[in-house]
Image: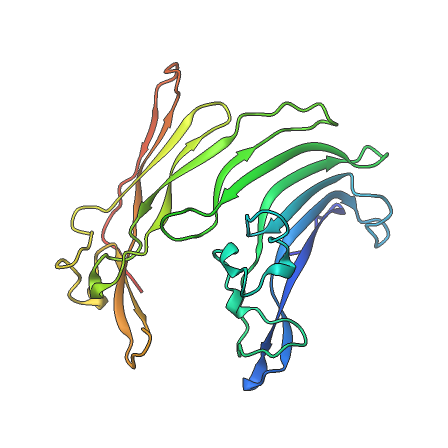
Length: 288
């Protein structure tokens, strides 16, 4: 979506930065270009559609999204021009082997869709008629975990504020997680594929939000306690067929599903009572 206009002529526009890639179409090796991804770069709003144009005046309000490479190495290593086989390990969750540049031999014969970018900052602006003045900004701290699946995770959000240069920095909103098995451990002698689940949020006012997960009794899985028939599976382990290397037949595998059982909102000063929301689930899962 790049353009929104209401019935009164008020307009908001979205601008994107595309990411391009190439692949060898029709089993060839000559690169065919396509958009493999992209990011929202800014939003202009408060515009007016006057006589068929929205460009009579600068946007009075704007949100700008700043991106960076999904890489945290020092120096110039994290420049996109260094995203190659030698440095691929710095982009831990990005498939460098699917990259093909314009004018090179492309041995990937299908388009793939992914991004090398992350979002470290968001800024908002007001234009009183003399140019943009930054009103607010958000700094997003991100990292790759050293255990479990190396997927980029959000560690904290800090709101320094601005208001024309006189902002007050708020304490960071921070996020904590714990590892849980993503696949039923040991089934088909496969590893657990542990992924991180969000468990705790500390807000910028100091309160905490804790999330508890579970699997209702009788709906969990373990080796020796697996569904006997995938078509009548009432557990929280969903079946997936996939092709292992060097095999000719698909393999049936089971992956874990965890449901939220409780959310606890806590005042660390114990002035306000805890707010507890508990969840119960009717029936059994029905996988399709």
